[in-house]
Length: 277
Image (cartoon, rainbow, N blue to C red; front, side):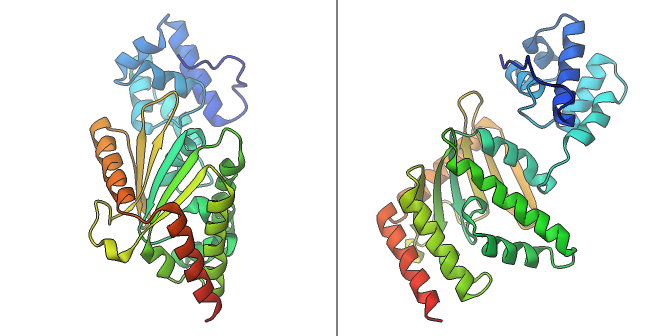
């Protein structure tokens, strides 16, 4: 089971939530597996809640209040613990991203957030949040760039990105921003041995993946999960049969893509074209 001893319960709302789950569970003499059975999840998941690895969910909090007889205690704590720098629909995936061993991502239209330059990210967020104040835009840009720290950490994930050629051809922020962005992707792909980049060319035609941006994540201590996203919404998929289907679709798409070196050469060539505009 996940160990959480030594965590300061007052470090954050999430650690306090986990400490409260552990306190109520141990008061009744229940194991993590026993509590998991009562709220329809695994003991491992309970351990991850107690260790503040997983963000609590409102539905799970209602069940915990029911089995513990704690009124709305965990539901109230849940609202505090779910506060995040990221959009609520992405926040759970952002937490899992930090723990992933491998992230296999397909990008149909835009450069993935983990590879975006500041100028590219700001152009995207500014357009998507056109009616929001500037400080909101800046906060979202900063949060996106902070996520990229995992790519430089020794224990960070292996990132395998497949980008449709449309990503290279869709201008975001103008030619200068695109040239900088594509050069950055190519540089990371060449310099970081834990980042692999492939391009699905237009000539590949229909593929298993032509829809939403999708990231498959695998972990050393938990089952795999998939996150899919479209405009202003996203979904974390943990149903094993669905996760398997997403992974197979990704594998088929990767097989239809250009090899890594050819992909990097194409990205560099398109970046050079942008410098001429």
